[in-house]
Length: 234
Ligand SMILES: C[S@@+](CC[C@H](N)C(=O)[O-])C[C@H]1O[C@@H](n2cnc3c(N)ncnc32)[C@H](O)[C@@H]1O
Image (tube, rainbow, N blue to C red):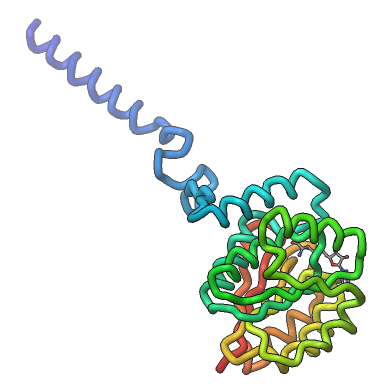
């Protein structure tokens, strides 16, 4: 009787073990682990103002984002612009495509620290008016010169060394902008191109930045519009 009971318990245990082994792993992400589709864990990455000037600029960006956006840079791309500008200690930044000034404010946050200046080009007088207002609200108007007109022409006025060029105007114009501005980009300077993922970038521009031994390009294409960062080698 005692032996039968013992056998029953062992049989039950074995059955239960094999049932557990067949069960699928628990669903949903582990805390701190990768999301269900795999890849890197998502990180909280809040914006934090270091001082009152940054607080004012970030508040103006927040306000500007309530208006019409015109494919302006995302917060992630804007942060990258600021980081690169401060990292290369940029003194002179040239932007093609001001729009309503969101990317300009990101640049200006860095230029306040580096002592540099942004020259930003746009063809649309209405957007320029909004940009000027946004720069004033952000407290960065003194760091920015807006140049109105067709940037394929107005870009020619830059003769002094440029630390950073940001291409974000007409997408089919990127190659022309590159050819015109590259001679004045300083060695060690950067050409940053927006929309390297969507809309589909001009293959002639991609070829130009990936086949020139004087240049080295990285593409950040994981999400959003996609950004290309090209170094003009020393
Ligand atoms: C995508 S928006 C720029 C967004 C801006 N960089 C931002 O992130 O806040 C493109 C801008 O390029 C301008 N644009 C288009 N073609 C141009 C040209 N040939 N010359 C100057 N500006 C041009 C448009 O008027 C528009 O405001």
